[in-house]
Image 1: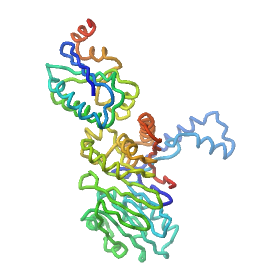
Image 2: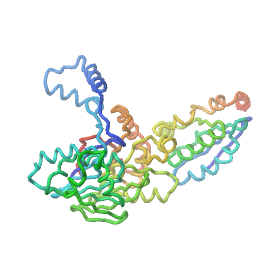
Image 3: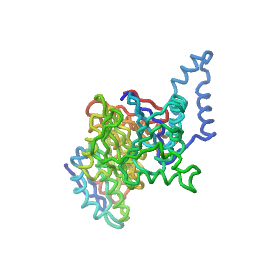
Image 4: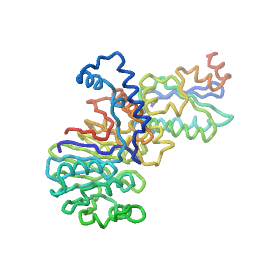
Length: 319
Length: 124
C-alpha cells in the first residue's frame, strides 16, 4: 500500500459551500492581509500558507469514497458515495476510454450516501472496465439496481451491468484482493455496516465508517481494539460529539471524536483520520472539532502520540 | 473507587475519587444509583463533587449521561462541581457542558440548588 486518497468525506448527504460562505472566507483573508507585503507571488503563497486550513480551503462536501493506492495494477476503493464521480473523472483523464481497468470496491453498507455515486462513475459505462463490488450484505446487487430503476434514474442498471460483478464476503474472514489482505468486521448501524482492515507489506489501514459504539459492552470495545490494532491509519466515523452520540443521536449509527481517540489509543494506532463529517458543520466548525480532538489526545496520552487529522475531499496520506 | 458522600439538608453531595474509566465505570454507576433513586421533584438534589476525580473516559461519561436522563425523567436536579482542569477539558470537548450545569466550586453548586442547604454548608 502506497497512499490513501479521500475523494468524499462528508456524512449522510453531499453539501457544498454557498456563495455567502465563499465570500466570508475571502473577506476574512483580505482583512487579515492588511498591512502585509504581498508584492510577489512567493509572498502571497507564504501568507496563505500561514493561515488556517478553513480560511483558505474547505473540507469539502462529497459523500463517502476512499481510494487505497496499492502500488499494483488494480484500483481499490471504499464506498461509492458522490466522491466516486471526481475519482472517475481522474481515471478518465489518466487512462482514457481505451485502457480497461479493474476497480475493486468494498462497501461499508448500502445506505444512499454510500451508493449514490455509481450512476455518475464514468468508467462503469465503458466496456472492458471491471468494477468488482465486494460487500457483506445479502442485498448488495439489489441496492444498486434499484437506485438506477425508473422513476429514480434515467439510465437503467442493465446498461452498466456487463462491467459490474458483485462478491459477497463473510465478516471476520480474510480475503486476498489486489495484493491486499482484506478483513471485514460487522459494525453497529441500521441494517448493519462493515468496516474493513487492509494489510500489505507490514502496513495496515482500517476503514470504519457508519459505526456506533454503545460503550456498554467491554467485549465489543475489545473486538474493535483488535480490529484497529497497530494500524498505520484508521479512518473513523467521528460525526457527532460524544454527548450527542449517546443521547439525542443514540441509535443513529454514528460515533464521536472522543471514542475514536480512545479506541485508537488502546489499539496503538499511529494516525486517526476523522471522517463522515456532520453535514451541518461548516469548515470552521470541523476545524474546531479537530483542535479539540488533538487536545483530547494530548491530555489523555499514555503512550506514543496518536496523530489526529480531519479528512477532507482531496486529502492524500502517504503510507 | 472511593466515595466520600455527605448531606446538607435536601442536597446530597456525591464525591467519587480517582479515575472513572473502563475499569471503574460500573462501580461508579452502582455507587451513584442510591443517590439518583431519591433525586426527584420535592426530594433530594444531587451535587457531583468531582474535586478528587483525576480522569473520566467515555464509559464514565456514559454513566453521567444515564444519570442526567434518569434525573430529568424524575424531575429532579443534578449538577457537577469542582472539576479538575483536565477533567473539565474532557467534559467540554465531549460537549457534556451542554448536559450538566457545572460550577467551579462546591459552594456555588450547593447555592444553586438550595439556600437552606447553603446555610448548612456554610455552618460546616
